[in-house]
Image (cartoon, rainbow, N blue to C red):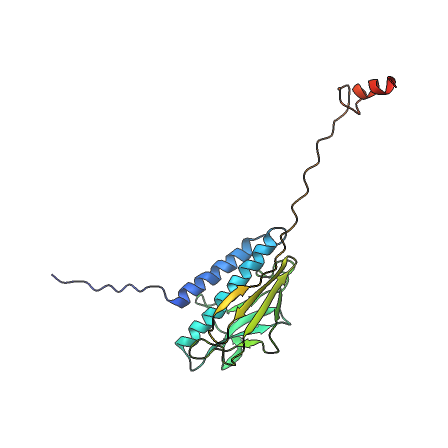
Length: 205
């Protein structure tokens, strides 16, 4: 009896990272841009940034001769993944689109008001990894993402290469005001203000 060899291939780490990134894009697109949607939009974006940084690490491990870097442009409020040999040109995702995340007002990720992007750890704005997925310059890296509801900080450890979203300072939105009670339409009813019981009280004084 002959056995057939299976040719099915499992998911790679890049595939899974891209799936997380796509879910983040969908989440940011469907969330409302006001009210309770603002904190969730910020949390969803921080998860997307973490996934993109980890994707750059994975791609660097696969091709260490030309590492994949993450470039943050604070002036334009966006970031992208590129090769170290050409950091100004975004690489393509598995779907063929440019690997760019735009946070400016009116964009899918930024929403109507936009999400503020700022690098908080010095003047450098590009993440470069070594053959082990650690930061090449040996210094920790932190990005702050903020909107009207607070801030989330995405931190990358230089020594271990671990990436996490931490130190969130989100303020929940105020609950909506309760609806006003229905007003008495007036007439000959017995309620106060309709001339019934209230009129009798006035006459009895």
